[in-house]
Image 1 (cartoon, protein in one colour):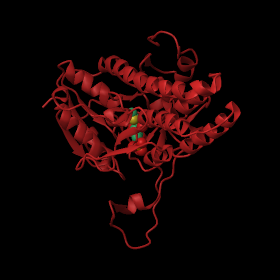
Image 2 (spheres, protein in one colour):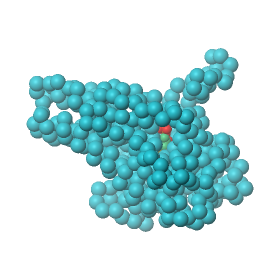
Image 3 (cartoon, protein in one colour):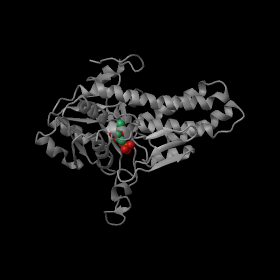
Image 4 (cartoon, protein in one colour):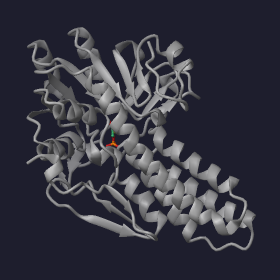
Length: 357
Ligand code: MRU
C-alpha cells in the first residue's frame, strides 16, 4: 500500500500544552507514543534516541523549549530568561553532533530575548517551535524535489541509517530524495544498510520503505563493498548531522567507509540535508564534536548481550566524510558542488533558492 493511503506517521506533535512523540526505539514492532508536558522528558527522549535524526531533534528541541517556557514562573523578564537558559542548556547537552538541534535552540533563544513583554514570550516560543517544524517539512520537500533530478530511472540506490520521515519529522532528506524519485514514476531499487549498532536502517528505513512500497534489500554494513564491486549500486545517498564550511560532513558511523568505497568504485556519493545542518562557524570536519555513546549499545541489543561479560567496546555514533569524497550536497536552496569552501562561502542561506554551480 502506498504511503499516501497509509495513516500519516506523526513523529512529533504539539498538542497545545504538551508534546506527543513516537518512540522510535520500539519500532518496527510496536508503535508506542510518549506524551508529556515536561521538557526534561523531551531531553531524555532525544538522549535515548526515542526521537532521533538531525532535523527531528531540532524540532523536538524547539518543542522542548516551548514546554520548558510554559512551566516557568517568574516575576521579571530577567528571571524568566535565566530559567529559560537552563532549559535550553539541558536540552542542548543531550546530543552534541547534529547542528540542527543547536540551530533550533539558538533560534528559540533569540525569540525569547527579542520579545519585550514577558506575558508574550511563552506564546512567541510556541509559535516559533511550530514554525521550525513547518519549515523542516518545507525544506525536506524542496530538497527532495531538487535531489530527485539526480536519480535516474532504473537505478539502485544505496542509503545508510534512517533519513526519512522518522529522522526529520517532515518528509525526509536522503530517503525523501529516493521517495520523490519513486513518486515521479522512476523505477528505483534501494539497498539499505542495517546500520550498526542501533539498526536505524534495519528497523526504521526498512519500515518506511515498506510503507512507501519502494522495493529494497537490506544488507549488513560490511556487505556494501561487495555489491559496489559487482556493479550493483548506481549511487549512494546519505543524510548529514553537521556540514562544515568546507563541505566535510558528519553523519552516522559507517558513512565515511561508504564514501571511500564509492570513490574507489566510481559511484556518485550524495549528501542530502537542509541548510540548518550546515555550520559555517567551523572551517572543517575536524572541529565537529563526535558523540561517544555507551559501549553496551555495541555489546548488547535490547537487553541481550552477545559478548563475553565485561567486554569493552568503542561506540562513536558518527564519523566525518572529507569533502573530496562527496559528489554533491543537496539542500533546499540548491545543489552545491565542489569546491565546497568557495561555493558555501557565497551560498545564499536566507534568500531565494539558488543553483550553485
Ligand atoms: O543517531 P541518529 O539515529 O540520530 O543518527 C541519524 C543520522 O546519522 C542521520 O543520517 C542524520 O541525522 C540525517 S537525518 C535526516
